[in-house]
Amino acid sequence: MRPMLIAAAVLCSTCALAEPVSLVSGDDYAPYADRKLPEGGMTTEIVSKAFAAVKQEVKVAWLPWARGFDEAKNGTYAGTFPYLKNAERERDFLYSNLLIKLQDRAFVKAGNAGKFDFSKPESLAGTKICLPLGWATTPKLAEMLKSEKIKKESPKDISTCVKMVANDRADYFVSDEAQGLAALETGGVPKGSVVMLDAVLADNSLFLIAGKSLPGSKDLIVSFNKGMEIIQKDGTYAKIVKAHSK
Image 1 (cartoon, rainbow, N blue to C red):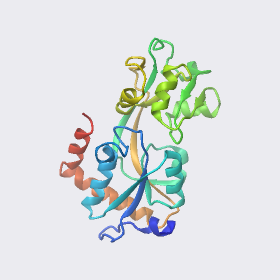
Image 2: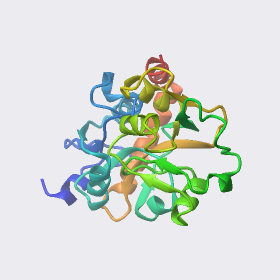
Image 3: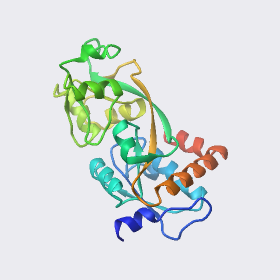
């Protein structure tokens, strides 16, 4: 099916189309998104159940994050998830109501916990962050990256960041608590070799996004938001979050 036809295969505010909505997500973002997780992860199940609540079927493809993002922007897919909000993305995408709230933390090599003061971003000048391809970071760190006060390594996934921090190839990575702790479990490094710092760097949220230039994107977001309201009111949303937070 041609990209624009896929992008247009969305739900109007009151009626379902026979054609499933084609969405894309990526792996290695436990507990939120990964094809190997039950139901594809927390946000995948939230998205699927929200659309189901408004009688719309969805199909989720799994691609590398950067590729999936570009293909959603270009219209190969009607939307993608889960994504943080930033100014660059807001230029090109419409955002749904939030999928889930997050708190960002820094993860460093054990023994280096006292080396970095994230409450004073200027003190991080000269350090190196591990930031996977397609990922955003906190506004303060993004500003320092843009001004090249800090440098970055950009592997394909967060598990590689765990290894890079453990092996002194990067100073830290930043992730929300649940995702970061999950990455430590699967990162292939000795337990305790990388640790999470106590300080909360930023409050964040994850969203479903759809390309602004694509036909049907506004209806897609309206329909999804309606479905979210339904599953939040009937308790489905809380059950999904609890099931994926164990």
